[in-house]
Amino acid sequence: MNNIVPIPLSIGNTPIRKCDFLSEYFKTNIFVKDEFHNPGMSSKDRPAYFMIQDAIQRNRIQAGGTFVEASSGNTGLGIALIARQLGYKVKIFVSKSCSQEKIDKLEEAGASIELCDNSNGLQDFQSTQFRAQSFAAKEQNAYFTNQYYNTQNIRAHYRTTGPEIWEQTDGQITHFLCGIGTGGTISGVGRFLKEQAKAIRIWGVEPRGSILQHYLKHRTAPNAVRPFDAIEGIGRNFVPGSFDPQPIDQIFQVEKDVSIDMAQWYYQHTDIRCGFSSAAVLASLKCYSAAMRFHSDDNVLLFFPDHGSRYLSKLYAENSKVSTSNAHSLNG
Ligand code: PMP
Image (cartoon, rainbow, N blue to C red; front, side):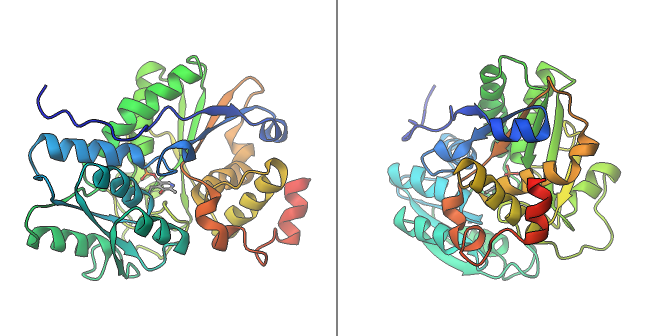
């Protein structure tokens, strides 16, 4: 095949480990897939690589051109690491609310950054999405990877994450649980796993007020869109093209504060700092485990897209200790 793009970094094949503490607490077998083992320390290296490879193969960008993306950080970092190694320039439009740790990493990776205001939604002219699109349209030899609408986003997870999970669990997985941002992970992994075994439950997690739970039930967006809690990487007020409801059985909504408590609870028990959206997945277990009705021989896989080192200031600062009331119930 012409135009094969060499993988410049070792992406994917991240480990899955059983978490004894969570298994004991929730009385089932709980496994975690730790995506921070990717070069950019997140699952988003996978779609970043697929989107870049696709653009180069289809001659949508020439040598020395600029890859452009709107990103809360992780996709941007994946694109920066890969595209810079291949000799391209990288411009990332980042929301002002993004953590400083992620912005520092993007700069270290050689990306040029523009801070934008997403408070009026991604359709607003000041938003990351709008400004990335206009920049790429005006700039010569620039390509907007557009993760929310790029079919390579789902394909990356369908071709890599899904098969890895199936093989690593010897086909014994019964539940897959992950946060939803663009929808690429849950749609791609969910599609692959359901093709292997229809009975596998595919469950998503989003912040309270995000609209995808409503969309899954009614196949239409709600009339009124409310602001929702900021949990970095997840939550939407529109339905992305990279969200396919087909393989998804249920979406749980969680509170930001409960997620912060869960990050600290998990850290206290495991010495591992999980990321914000990983903590939201833990919050869904904490709040809905009765409704989830696990059996003792189920194999539940939690997808942890990145690492807590990206959120030290938001999740692990001295002044954000587990609130007393929640600490009591969490330990109980
Ligand atoms: N968690 C984090 C930390 C992320 O960066 C993302 C990507 N926005 C997600 C979860 C959601 O993944 P997806 O976009 O595939 O739905």
